[in-house]
Image 1 (cartoon, helix red, strand yellow):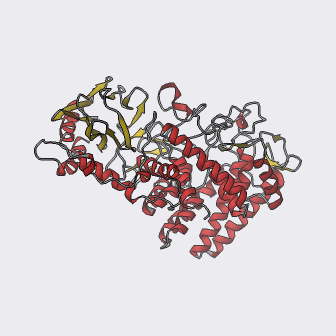
Image 2: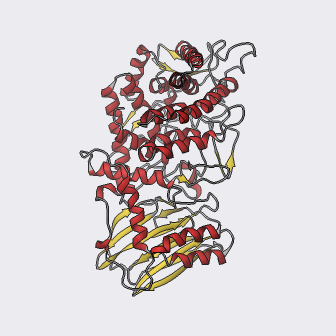
Image 3: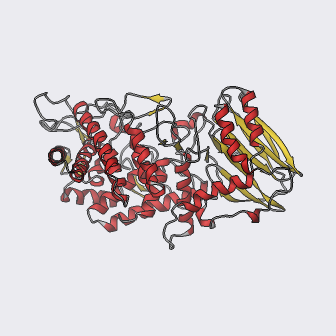
Length: 590
């Protein structure tokens, strides 16, 4: 790994200044328009080298988060080393660039800007104004810092290497040779080339869009065995693994940046499938588990396929083959009451489906699972019905007539079972049920709205569900609460009533597909406004948002702490949030 790190640095150092001298003035740098670059500094910002720029490694996790103790990068390495940067109080910093791999601030009273940047996967370099200090704290034996001076300004390089401090020191020494100005230019090129939205996009929203692409960038890994293509994670810290439900959303965001990256993000997930079609909910070079995740890969692949001007039929065939096997696995292994008899079709009886756990449903802490998982889950059943319908469309596009008819029949059968058995006409809502005609599990949750989001509810049912969306039970300033406010377990955060932007997004798209444009625009605007507001307050795109989130306050935001005892509260700089924000801005009405 030391050799790979040094190779990457050697490339960056090719433009290094041959002899120390005065640093070029800030005005000599070429900056994109300000609204096209993120610039909000805040606690919890995720920092790392991106697999889009070069080689990355899941181990060691040379990933940092900004802490509230001044300008401190807390690395999530063994020993928790921290890079602490101190600037004399006389200098006032104005942040011009705050991205996942570059921090740049104009310094009042000094011409060259303060700079902190990832030069490679394991090396961070920077420059401080006169009197500045760079210190390394913590007990990371394999992390080192080296310092140099150009005039009275401090240059530094932080490096880590699992092989030991000697290798880390060699990498840091190479880091001191990197041309900071060239590194800045290369990092800013990403934002110059990223989509910027319409000319009428408000500046605060345009900056948030740039932040969304920064989040996508930091959470994209380079190929690393056993994964042979670029792959994505919901968050480089604390999540660090590949997740199929999240990756489906990632692809929809990445297609605006680079369609080939979107395809790779999905191909990386397909590559984890077993011979039977099972796709693990967590996978990657360092992890795998025997728990599934909500199936949404067909929807993502179909969206990417239709978005690309030159339709890639090979990508569609590969996606169809992988997802068809996955959905058949679900229909056999998650069918309520067990698999259908061998001689019967997968839709035998009333085809309804049950989660193996709350974690598999991706809703840990939801009161739906207070008494176990032995019930027909409205959300899983709906996901399966929707994926069957999309597989029908994919098969039709590929000319697979027989398969298209089979998936159409499956979609019809599951949809009919949902409408007949999981709809409570008195309440006007979908609920889980212990059996097709068994006891109701009456928890008012987002799951009951899934048939509206994914096109499974009939028109009358959709009318009733839309009334609930507009009512006090689920409507919040931030969007749609995951748990009805009337539920005793509702706290307004997480899966106990917090707002998850991907779920808002699915409902927006579901409303649009039914021609309910006014309701869709209202929910889309609350979604975009909340993410924008939070970003400009705190500098991050959070995993979830409190249902009471309003303008001018960050109170109640639990989805953001990524260290210590708070690590299970959620991630900041979350890829799914970034992806759906970008798609709503760039495809407001697909």
